[in-house]
Image 1 (cartoon, rainbow, N blue to C red):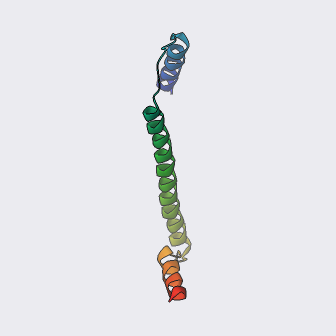
Image 2 (image 1 turned 180 degrees about the horizontal axis):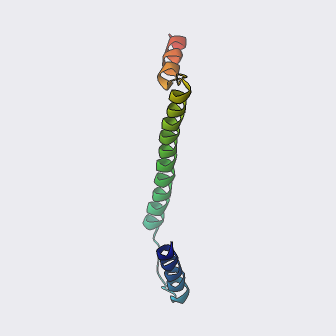
Image 3 (image 1 turned 30 degrees about the horizontal axis):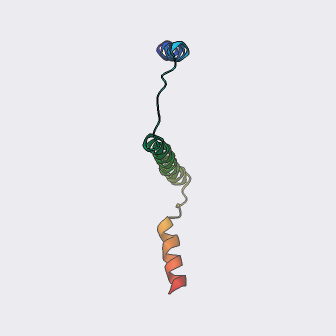
Length: 82
């Protein structure tokens, strides 16, 4: 924890003591940053869904219930369409 505090305070000091860069951000850089944010959010949501399903299946296994698969829902939808 002390190491993380040292890094945090070092970053704060670095950002506070820097001078203006007078840099230009072109639209390509902004678009790449937005794409990075969207991909990060999508990856985080997928990861949460994956781990939630694993946790849910683990709990159902412990209490003896069978978890309902998404494939069952897809089969029901296909039957309704036909």
